[in-house]
Length: 339
Ligand code: PHE
Image (cartoon, rainbow, N blue to C red):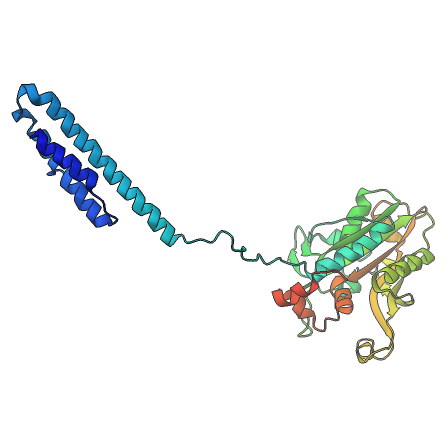
């Protein structure tokens, strides 16, 4: 009997296969419930006492040899299967990660911020959902004032009154309420208007408004500040101020820059005049200062406001405003470098 076991050990040692079915059959033959090893164990009681020790050692050896063998063969097929399926070339260059790009509106907004930052303006921000006081009343637009119709408003709630801000002038009111002059701040942000008059219209756009309050601020300061700005941003050094009306500034003006008439496009965008309107401005109405508890006898100031979309369209020669909101990557990625 012991001899037979020794032969089986030899058979185990000689066994070799790369086929997992064959290895499984081999395992069942030796280690399975009805396999050789369990048979030898069940015959243990029949063995003579004197041989029991040697017999026991022999089956244990057979068992461990068979286990080791199966382990070894399984490992070797796993390795070769891995080699086959994970045929990965680690030296291959990785696939490119497409870098995103900043939206042209963000690029222009930051350019404008940088220009005013250079001359001492800080940045202020405020909520897009505003109340009537900050968006209208404090800006010298009392209830039922006809100028409220200048900006078609999205109202949210009557009491408490809530609306989507129609301009970032509301941020300037908040800034004046919380800061003492001298104040130099610009307020970039998204604003909303319910304009459904043309197919080109859209319900929100972006603005940057500026505010300067100190003692003895004059209209000349306003003009020089805007001239500096237009030189920096457009490289154009001729501007003109046309009288206009805003409830919160007195006097008020529209700012035109001289764009020139050097190409057909120039003719088209300036309607043959060479001039382009780029923003509104004026001296802050003393009523607005008083509303914000700033002494209008001591302080004066100017304010201005512009739409970022319009500036971006001029600088990048974008013809249709809608494309700015379509988020077409092919369009947006053209503006990787700021101008
Ligand atoms: N708030 C004005 C608008 O949205 C722009 C403006 C700001 C005009 C400051 C004059 C002074 O149209």
